[in-house]
Length: 512
Image 1 (cartoon, helix red, strand yellow):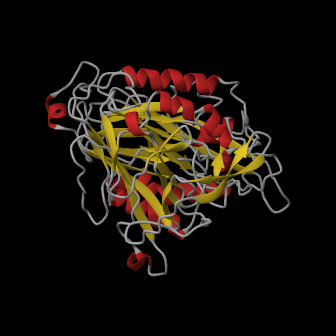
Image 2 (tube, one colour):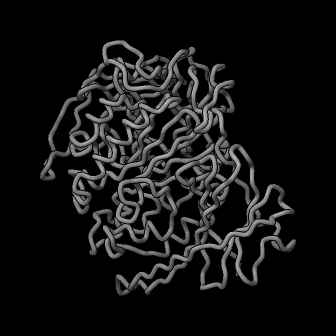
Image 3 (tube, helix red, strand yellow):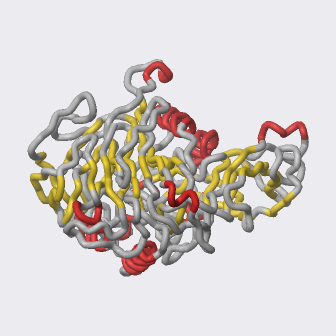
């Protein structure tokens, strides 16, 4: 019996920790991971933890389902090292030459900042477009991938209620679909509304905890497995569970009693005070700023978290929920602080924060109330009539000016991080993260890398590559992106003034 559905995740320290997860259709004896520096020498053997998951029959046409997920924690790894691994159990040893084709690889984060790519999207599901997105992401060779929730849509209703329509077997399909990329790329997920599976306690997240092994450094790893943080190079990444603060979908609203928001402030403060962290990227499901007809913006996110993003000058916020691509201008206090056309640069400490909705991973698409606008197809609008969700599930109409780029299509976000010359020679005892001049910028499509000027964060919302020929059908999947580049002389440190100072030395450039 062969394992399937392999997926990787970082531990709290991506330089030295990796989590290997997989699935088997039936109970096995003594599951394990073999790991080594050569594919023919997997001498290190680590036992795996078994996490069974039982789903009762939830409808007359649905059977009871028993699934078994396995997880192995690899610690004390060498930074910047490529490892080979194989998963197995009694009767199936990946070191056996008959199973050589099942061996995978992963690479730990480097000690010192190096050029790397990460990708992101939300709202994937199981579909032809979702599979195409995975293959395009694999072609970007990302160091990791951020999944902003609504992972597989086994719960197709998304209300987080016991009456939701749910088929646990969809997870088997999803993990098999995703294995081709997640077996080598750490697949860092958080929770969307379709991931609140109410029959699994606690908070409907028991299934999430069974299937995934995310870092356990959030405020409560058991009750909120989608809340955590990690640092890769000069970029701090924070994952949040917006179900806790949503005004639109309220099944889990307030479940943390404010603990998540207090943890978020502590974590943002720590990242801003940590030497060598030039950029902070936050990702979660519900949108702070979006204009689609599907869900638009969630006032709960705006009320709870946007003030903290602005206080600690978060550089980039990535959301899903709305099944489109949308990129805002630089926003502060809910208004446009600076218009950011394609190709322009913005300083997050001075000009505000750019928000990206990347919800076109594979589920059926939404639409906008106004025409799309992207590179080569710019349809600028002075304003867009939209709405946001207020407490009490009330829709409040608003006219906004911040919707800069809109694309109705399957897509994902790709961001390229490039260290500056000072970073190449810098390092510290905590992993070589000290140093200035560390840019993060986005990888453009067709194998090109557009360069922003030194000291910028780049936000690109253009369609830069299509895969219509590969899909052999109408439509396509498009990588789009934003890029972050540190200002020369930046030192990490605390957030700077909002009126022009470069407190943490970062700017945002929107390019194609």
